[in-house]
Length: 266
Image 1 (cartoon, one colour):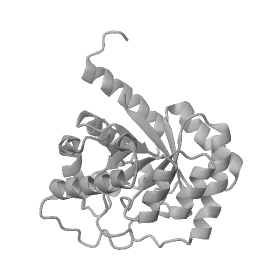
Image 2 (tube, rainbow, N blue to C red):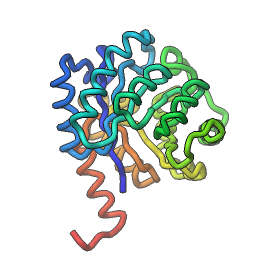
Image 3 (tube, rainbow, N blue to C red):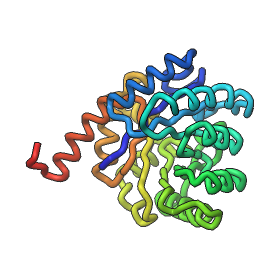
Image 4 (cartoon, one colour):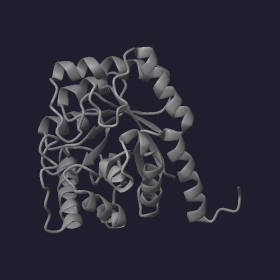
């Protein structure tokens, strides 16, 4: 069963133009609609990770995310994920109802490892080359898939050694994070090779720039391109999809799964 992770960006500078929901009520309404449309997880983030993004302070990120996590945990019935690489943000989110940490830096921070283990939280470990400010400055790989597998394998070992339950680890190859458009297409095409890691695969291709390059379109005009990427990601082994447009992706995946499984009980 493919899971859908709905994105809630509490940032003014999100690449997709969907950030900054100004009131708690509007954030809750937005998330509730996502759940109604098929989201199995809600991912809350307070710092943009788009290429060239400037970091925000811990104080600012806490102000953006914790009240939202607190409000959402009382209103929605699906798990809440906190999209952060800051241990203190993760700790306060887990204290206020979040059950998962989505860390774009691959659990490279020992304090983050300790907090995830302490709270027995689920965790998404993502591959990224460089950091958001520099990651798209001519990223080069000798062997793209091998390097991603090696990076994620080491991160899994590090997490388990820190006391994190292996069964709560999800891996993400990091579409768009230190990758060219060609790299992103190769990852999606060869996604099944990451199954060697033995953990569920999350793919975050939603509205990404490689889709825009193919279609010559802006972020909010990439829904059909996103759906296409998501369907093929599922065909090639994705278990979770992190998306902005929950309903079209959810409906497309239901049809794709029915075809893949040749269901006759419709």
